[in-house]
Length: 218
Ligand SMILES: C[S@@+](CC[C@H](N)C(=O)[O-])C[C@H]1O[C@@H](n2cnc3c(N)ncnc32)[C@H](O)[C@@H]1O
Image (tube, rainbow, N blue to C red; front, side, top):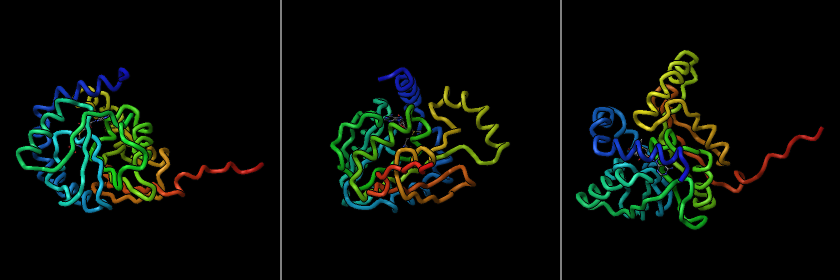
């Protein structure tokens, strides 16, 4: 594991015991509705949730689906395991880094992540790995906060970012939509949930998305 990953993992291990409490009000006011939407967008029966954290998506898992969920923070995963046992949630929980997934190519119908790509140290590598394990024709569903397109707000977010990263391990100035494009997903569908900052992103692993763009001839 590289230094950046070790640092972020340490931060999530540190906040794991208070993570649910920190987000409690936001969860009731906004996140719970957004999570419902995310899980309504899944397709197929075999799902991977990356960056499962303390298992806040468990109440929205569709019944009858085979779900594997991973995280690289052992302390977050302990909380998720306790929650899964308490509420009898059928999920395979595994300690794993999104940037090097231990699954075979083309394993999952849908890969889900909620508020994860703000903290993955190398998000392009993470999304490329997800593309590899996603079946051809499969999709990803992401719920992410990103940098605002408003210049003033973006400047404030950029200014505050180092403090937020240090405290919580999350960046508030990521351009996750561009990262999804860079990783090769196509088409991409966006649902704006709060201004242009919180987005529900659906993107597909189509054969079209594997085609390289041919440079124009001079
Ligand atoms: C902000 S929390 C979100 C947790 C959960 N998805 C939710 O919606 O509450 C981000 C999670 O992503 C995990 N994470 C970040 N980078 C990761 C990586 N490279 N591999 C695996 N997990 C990662 C962190 O450990 C943390 O649990």
